[in-house]
Image (cartoon, rainbow, N blue to C red; front, side, top):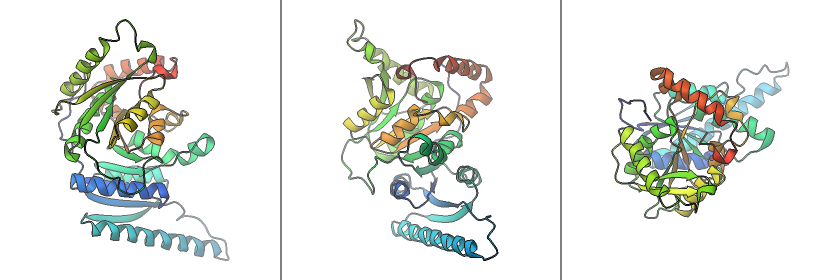
Amino acid sequence: MQNPEFQTQVSFDNVLLATDFSAASEAAFQTALDRCISFKANLFILHVFEYPNSVPPESGGLLIELDSFHQEAQSSLDELLRRTKLLGVACKANIGSGIPADTILDTITSRNIDLAVLGTNALHGFDRLVFGSTAEAVLRRASCPVLTVGPQVSKGVQPETLGRPVVFATDFHLSTTCAIRYAAFCSQKMKVPLHCLHVLPRALEGGPQSHAIPQIMTEALQQVALESGTTVDPPVCAISYGSEISNAIVDYAKQHNAKLIVLGVRQASLIASHIPAHIAFRIITEAPCPVLTVSFASAYQATHPAAYQQQETSEELEQSLPSGSRGIQ
C-alpha cells in the first residue's frame, strides 16, 4: 500500500463555521469555539442568505419581508460575534449569498480555511436528500477537513473527563489512511489518547484464526501511521466486529466516550453523495461526538493516476458486495 506524500504540516489556523442559526448550528458553534481554543485558531463565521436575487412583486411586500429576514440574520450573526470575542477568540463574520454548498466551498478557498465546521440534522428519505445535501456536498468536495456536528452531539460544551479519545476509524482504503495525520494532530493538540479502530465482519469473530487477527491488524494500523509520515505516541489499536460498520464505530465511540471521530472519505459528485444511508453519513448522524472527515481523492488522483484508476476499479466491484462488508464511504 502506497500513500501520497504530503509536504505541508497539519494545521488548523483558520476555522470556518457555516451557520443557519438552527439548533444544529448552535451545537456546531460551540464545537467551533472549543476547537479554536484548543488549536489557537482564528474563526470566520459565514451565513448564506439564499434569496437576495428574488424579484419582488409591484407591491414591494416580498422585498420588505426579505429585508426583514436579512436584518434578523445580521442580528444573529452579531450575537455570535459578541459571544466569540468574550472568549478571546479572534473572529470575523459575513453574510454570503447563493447556493449554500457552493458559497461555503468558495469561502474555504478564498480565505485559506484549514477546517470547516458544520451542523446537520438527522433527516431521512426525500427530506434528507434536500436538507442534508449541503453538509454532504461540502464534506465530499472541500479542500480542507470538515468537522460535522450531528444531532446526537449534546448542545454546548461537553463536560471534560480524562481519557476521552480521538477515534480514528480505518478500512485501509488509500484515503482513510491519509486521515491518520489529522487524527494524530487532534489527539496531540487536545491532549487526549488516540484510538485506531478497524471493523471486521462478525463472521470472523471466534473463528479458528480469531486469536491472530488482533495482532495482525495492530501491526497494520501501526504501519498506516509510519507510511503517512506521522509521528504519534503509541495509539490504542482496537478491533471491533460488526455486520454494520457504522454501528460498530458509533458503538465504540459511545463505549469510550470519544471526543472526536476521524474518517477518511472518498470525494464524489453530489449525485454519488446521495446514495441512501452511506456509511459516513450514518456515522455522523448517530455519533455521540463531532466527526472529522478528510478527503484526499483529488490530490491522490493528480499525483498517482494509475494507482487511483486501480482503486476506482476496486470501488466499482465493491458496490456489488453486501453493505456490511464495504469500507467507509
